[in-house]
Image 1 (cartoon, rainbow, N blue to C red):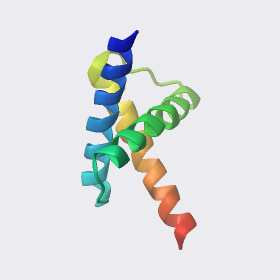
Image 2: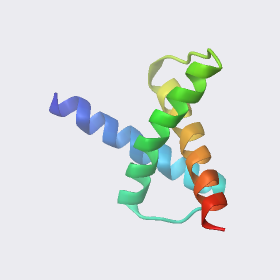
Image 3: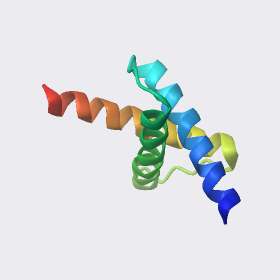
Image 4: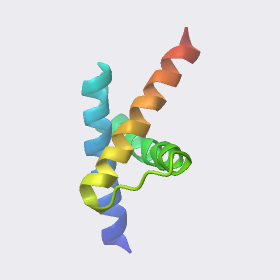
Amino acid sequence: MLENVLISLLIGAVSGWIAGIIMGSKGGLLKNIILGVVGGFVGGFIFNLLQLSINGIVGTIVTSVVGACVVILVARLISR
């Protein structure tokens, strides 16, 4: 159980960091973790709507990065 949480946080941190680089967003480790975890949910929802399925850890990271990029984009649009 604890191992799964730590793996999810690590994947979230990596995904948030990659999305931050892609979108030119700056932030610390906590922001990257939150962005990656939320991005995982958003990316999963988007991929489910499009009926796309990517398996494995790389697929999970890709899904989270796509979702995190969408979250950053929406946040930028709202903050304007």
